[in-house]
Image (cartoon, rainbow, N blue to C red; front, side, top):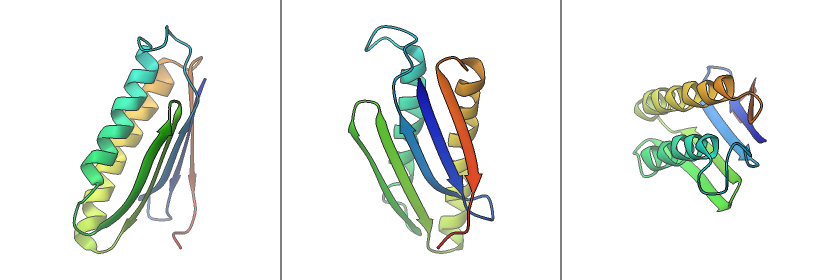
Length: 113
């Protein structure tokens, strides 16, 4: 089971995304659920990394683990993070909705420190 936890700040901006586990929907290397989650999260990280106006920390330290932490530094960064964050969240929601036996997603809000 893949467990996804997304934290949004009080304005709805992506703050953290944590992904843990394996879907178990197919054999290793051929699991469509794991592949979908991996592509969405890694593409979001690549898209956000190095973007002016953002601080981004992300890693996939080992198979079945992905973390992403973000901070917008200005209005341009905020707008870009809002768009990419919403794309990521909608994609992950879609996977969790289509494969609820293999993927769960929890979204919470907290104040950005």
